[in-house]
Length: 113
Image (spheres, rainbow, N blue to C red):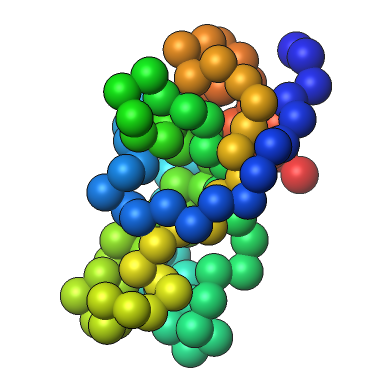
């Protein structure tokens, strides 16, 4: 698999993220997601960025960070519109969002550390 470079750190509204589960190499319990959401709310921030790839239709494809994404979705009704947790922080990966095999392999590699 080729190395995937990151280009930029972004703050993206959650509704601009395509978070299809096809690249999610791990499964998380609702309790695990709630625990992370509570930690994010207590600290007021997301500690690690997610991986994003540009999607051809103006959205960002979520490559890794599904648990963080789900925790942020859980918090949307609990924080003000101006709160930093209304958006997701991610690195823009220099990879073709249509290359499904590479995206899945990158997710597995990211989650095996």
